[in-house]
Image (tube, rainbow, N blue to C red; front, side):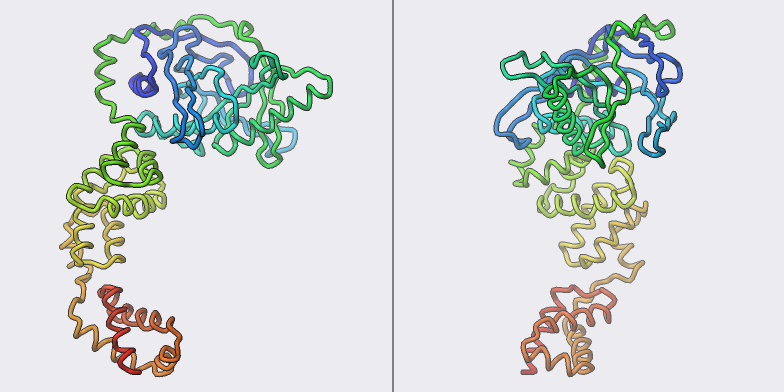
Length: 427
């Protein structure tokens, strides 16, 4: 209930003080009970909208209005095109609670549909209502598609429902394919039948899943095992107060306050808890450096570990200390990345203790580095000759040798400068 309320408020909808559950009866392999518990008549949320505009890449602005948001049971997963002539059924998710967001028929293009879903995904992730990983099935999209002749009402066509579209690319592809199919049916003098269809991304075609029943055929009845839900205004306001700054407001503020690119801020907004981490670490530091480290190194580690930031052991104090050590030339860039790995592995030691434990003290004595470089140059006269003849890439060869000899404890920029100076002296 609390997660649903967060989503409804975040989408500018109204949480209903009173809601109730219904049974929706139908027989299909994805619903072994023979009915689905839903909220057809008294949903937990009504109203709301998703605003699309230039921030989403459109040349115009448009509001996609929400009709209702309802809690209901998930169905099993139907798997097509594995064994010809058979449909496999994965029952693991059947009966799990979900929130269904039902929009008004305001969407006119495949791009608008994909952008709408993307914006909902970003919002729900940011406010902590759901992970919304479409590839994992924690967010899916059903699309009703219809076409109409010029001059007729835009809603005059017979709609077909495309079920369980699981990526933005698939949403665009499925809608385009279904639009073309319906146009072809009409041009051939036939009538589009109301039905439920799937999408075969490999063939780029939709396929019949089952004929669609009209709403009265579902034989809705009040759910006898779940009582009515009553939410007080005080409870709803308490949920509202826990919401963070919403994505659009955060995007505008952080772009202006920290002079970051739109893409960078949107990337951080997409990961729950990331904006808080960024702002904590950016205090008194170069915000662009902090953002770059989070979106490249931290996110890289999260991806490698298949982990969310909120589940990570990394703290703002640890990332701050790591970046301070890098700025103060206590560690090299390579060593700083290794420090990040240690912290994300759960190590709680200070940066200084980790540096000492790994023997990562930076060699800052340029006389010592010069002696190491001279020794290596003396061992490779042919490479020196090549450099002096204009083969500038030989410089990188010597820098690599020195870095290897120092076990990465020297700063690459210092080594490059010293090696360059020594090579020039041999002209």
